[in-house]
Length: 478
Image 1 (cartoon, rainbow, N blue to C red):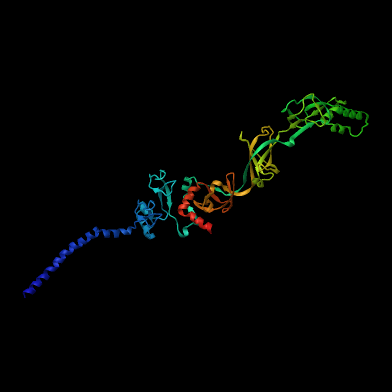
Image 2: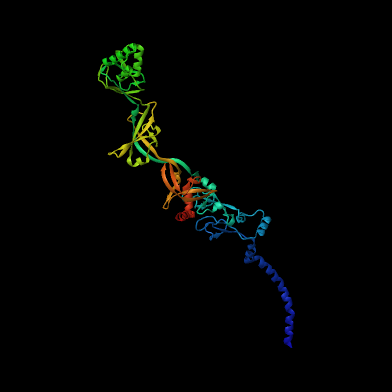
């Protein structure tokens, strides 16, 4: 009986105790909810904080301001999978989002700092390049579109994209591939000589004596029609007498005037004879051309024989250039081939064409003489002067680019093509001759395409880093 009484008393006291403990447990529950860190992280996960990754190594993650442990690039925000409705709601409720939240937008841009000379070196504002010491400059990093958003021009196999502002900073310049007139350059040594076609010898056809010599020294300048000398010749006087008798009497045997010419009298001397109407004791001889006395074989009072050359007159208004061209280069030359002649002493240059190629070669020097003609109205060019001659052989219109624009590798020659909008790619080409700073392109590119002719080495280095050269090699092999 005593046991039952005790049990009843225990049941009477239990409900109040539990009621009293219910209140503090509820309060404790609320405190635990607000102070539990695990529960706090779960609640904060709904805010969709962005994850930062390395652009070159996406497997490397971190927070804003961290760098990639492999390449050293700043980590950038990765786009989250939050629904567009929630994202829009967040923008409506938080108009002043942080930079980290804005970085997850597809059109967002973030400035990273790179070295102008070594683009693979990155850092923060104010840092210097550890290689060359240059200040790092901002480079705009764009989120590359995917899928249908890719433009056809940005999807060319083997091409790379470089920001236009970056290429301008590097001094990248392009030029159009077009046809130009050029050919091989063949060099030779030449010598100025008198034009033999403008040389005149003055001789007598009858025996006589020189009574008057107007030109007394080599180098005297004469004009056409000037008196050179006078000859006393009995045979010439007899011919003149027959001519005058025939004119007076009308009785002529043969052609008296033609006889005077055969005796050596020129037209001007015959005209003087007709005007005077009597024979001349001293027959004058006149200069047949303008020129300079280059040879004088008599003096005044000298006896001359029949057919003897008394002097030589040379016209230097035109001169020849005789160039000795090696036999191996003759196959590329022909008449009317353009050539440039340079005087080493003065640096003056003249342009002309080949007038004649001699058919006989020099067996000792293994060269052939090529003749060119130069105008020399002021007599500046002197005979026996040595000159440099440059022939433009095989001159014709060819597809050509500046020689500096052509790069060479183990695979061969190639150029950097400018596709447009900051897109470039290396293109294998087959080259031909090179001259005057130009290189002929036989295949690989066509007329009208644009290539890089300045700063192409920086783009080439960037292409190597991104694998563009490997793609070029694949295309070349195919």
